[in-house]
Image 1 (cartoon, rainbow, N blue to C red):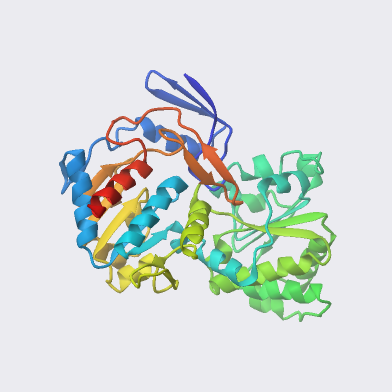
Image 2: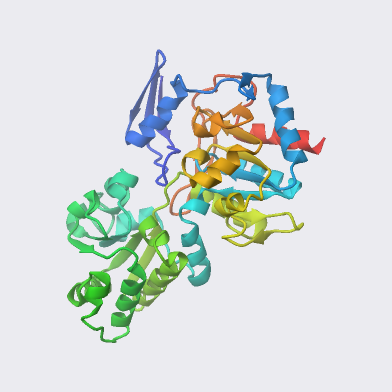
Length: 427
């Protein structure tokens, strides 16, 4: 059977034009990249989790729900960590659980674009949609990002190659600039590649801003940043003369030294550019719904991630209330992880401490996280086995629809599973 216009729930592009063909237990995906295809193949994978486990042994669903509620309710400082490839509806319930328990809620932004969110809080975010980039942008700057590999359909669907309303010739109507310490695959097709010294983005952002303000910059900047004065002047002129420009800021900006200060500097640069032309900035968010968590968490708590409810109200202080820091200080005494292979990505000491605590994992497939969990609950793939809302990297919400049933009847979605756990906690 063929299903059309399926929303992909893997990366921040959240492509909504996938065609999925399910025939005799085989899945064929059209319009999807390798990552999107691999994600959908998990629906029929031998690695799929189809029944609950308690302490490594198969268990009844009701017992797994009760055990999960017992672990969380008996904890003094529980951490709820929700991955970004699940719906905002499930995220809503996860936040409710954290509020009810007086625990902490966090998500993937804590170890990726968290500094981007913080920088936007400081300086504002002169942003746009991917559709605006497609139809209007004649200058695209990939700064610390490599969408050719991180978001395989980014350049082909929205930002470089497609023909838009004001960019009718596609790539021939656009200029691509890449600023990166290494020559990436995106840099190979760029009109201008600037090789910057790692950690010196902040200096170059401010140098560009100085040029826009009519100030002179010294040639010695090349010794410091590996970017020559001529390159800075060339890039500044390209920015000023663009009809519509956009910076796609990646983790190279957010995770290098100065972190949120980098983001604040580049957003102030974009604001200054708007004195000359129309310019925007967009974060190259990695996961399908990581932007959605920041939206829903801010709406519910006033803060975007890493929120602590132990005081009876929302408390937010990155570096104190965020996952790695909590585990490093050995404060957490119970953890529930939904749809995230957290044990694969955290520092070794954080994982070692985490492994000694009672853990509940809700996931569709076995991973290092399930190997150290006390309770493992089968997950439901959002956007395939249940419908839900996903926020694209440009903060546009998309409704993903269901096209196949889960391989079990314990639950209909991760939202439903979390509601069952919350109900059991309240009992």
